[in-house]
Length: 153
Ligand code: IDP
Ligand code: MG
Image (cartoon, rainbow, N blue to C red; front, side, top):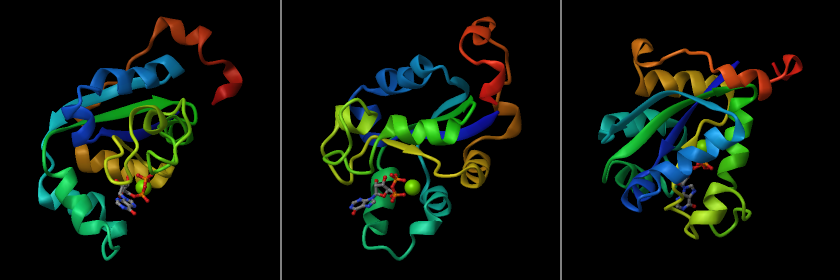
């Protein structure tokens, strides 16, 4: 079973979209096993976005992500990393397909509402940046036998 890191970015929190964004993951059948609000420090933003250091949008990205609180969530399920990326949609709101989170709620390149890890490896690293192990709660849902079949992983 995979886990991935989701952030509802500052624009999503300010616009009152926390519930509507996170409900997409529950609707899909994925499970929330970690959840918190926090204001990202410049140090944490730099570690989280280290792969983008040096890119033209990097400084603005760190400013944006540290400007107001975010919601951090750990989402669990079969293929959670790829499913999360497809629920999010393309990076820029103006490019993202309707039906995706970015496609339905935004039009901007920078203010794109949500972050999701892009691989199983980066998910493991990013989850560690945002959560201590004891903050994650493994639990069974009785309904999962109707959502996840034995060949889903
Ligand atoms: P992703 O969030 O879809 O994985 P990345 O390429 O990893 O996209 O970029 C990380 C974040 O940096 C984006 O979500 C977006 O907030 C910001 N970003 C990326 N490219 C641009 C840009 O060209 N202009 C402004 N912000 C950008
Ligand atoms: Mg990315």
